[in-house]
Image (cartoon, rainbow, N blue to C red):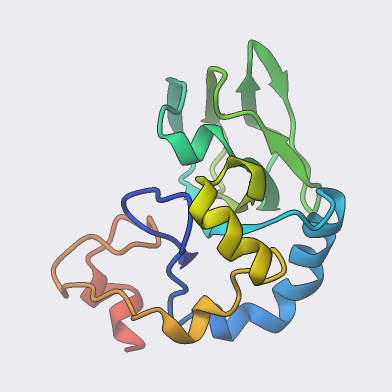
Length: 181
């Protein structure tokens, strides 16, 4: 499920999707914790719940989009099991529920879920203001490093009923989150 997300992996002016408002209060302390850790200098550009089905894998790869390699990608396992292995830079990790892990997207990484249970992570991408182009840095500074004001300015993403649901369930939207719409 995509709460703050853009298909073009932009590095600024993120789109806040309508469901973000449903989780905003619960996420506030977590986002504040991440902001404090990075000195408050930046903002969230992506915030998604990502699932990996049981007995599935994400093959070894390295991200190449500017925004993905110039942000701090924080994984928070929500649902996991002992048979999930996250490999980052050749090192295997076991990420436990509730832990916060920064994953370096510019290094090779992969995930294998050998268990029956699906893995669900909350992924938050924090953009340091220093990685923005100069004209965007001035706007971020004027906003106090926060882009939360974009919530009211963003238009909701239109999802076709017959496309695969953005939540990564593999189901068509009309049979998944489109049921609630």
